[in-house]
Image (cartoon, rainbow, N blue to C red; front, side, top):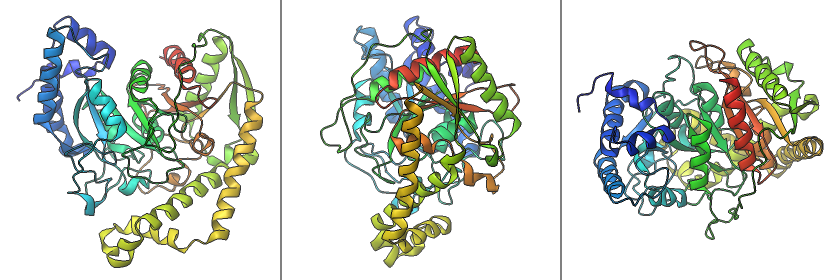
Length: 454
């Protein structure tokens, strides 16, 4: 399809705005899908956001949506909306490669639980997004499928491992996306690419059909360009799955009005992480906005939490788990893994019970510290990442998950919220962390903060 730049302006719309355009007849779902696919065809060779695009299936799905609309039989707010899927989720008839070269042709026959939910909601699935190999990384670099380019600033990292989903959203190659988050894998790329993402309460969204990094810490996470889209996508993805051992039925609780004063703890004592000025500026603006809205802001000293060591402990457990999952291939064909991933898995193979106990002790100490903090506050506010996006190869990658590991270790919901200070600046981001099961209220407060910051 030949499309002009003016044709692409509708791709700026979020899902809620797109539904209005569809309702008013300004565009059809098929036209929207065709424009999205045209932009992917134009931009993806540079961005490497998608590894596979299924244009014919997307157009057919969009045509079905238009037919339902003509019959006044829409399936909900996602009907006809383009959506991208991280490549470690199972989509029937598509390869589920998880960023691993040896799985490039590993076509699956069944949908992941969340893909079934998306199909039932009428979403238009575009294709698979790029990721760090095995979801074990935070840079978006992949030797087999290409390094994901950050649309906000080529040359800097996208973060990972849901790098392609974040880049596709930031570049307007999709309206919505889903990723997975183990230590920060939807929130870190969301921070670096200037979008929104949610790591839900552990078990609120089924992980059935996801190639595991570590089942205890893995989450499926919605990703979007606005908080209202994030909340809409979350409502579609939640649901108890009796075939998923971590799934539980998250019940919708009456929302606490965003204007009702809450106690919000803001994390302090992280100078050793060397935060940059843009991150601190965005963080301070978020604190000021919440205070201006009438919430009580309470400092929470994280000096003794050892956040980088906790992030490293969770990562080490993932290395151990993945080394076990790939033990036979590691033994028989180590060359099937990229040098970077092979090094991580070899580390995992060398760990013993005493090492695991040491890692678990770090995590347990953080769980105890956060329990103490949450006895005094309703929410916790922190930067999403210590710095904005950095050049590939920078040592800053070691601390990328220092803040995101808080919610990962404790199973709490955490939403990443863009807090841009200038249109041409690298994106900054903060995260709101809530009580387990309080995802809807976390999203509600995040939406009000987004409005205040914008």
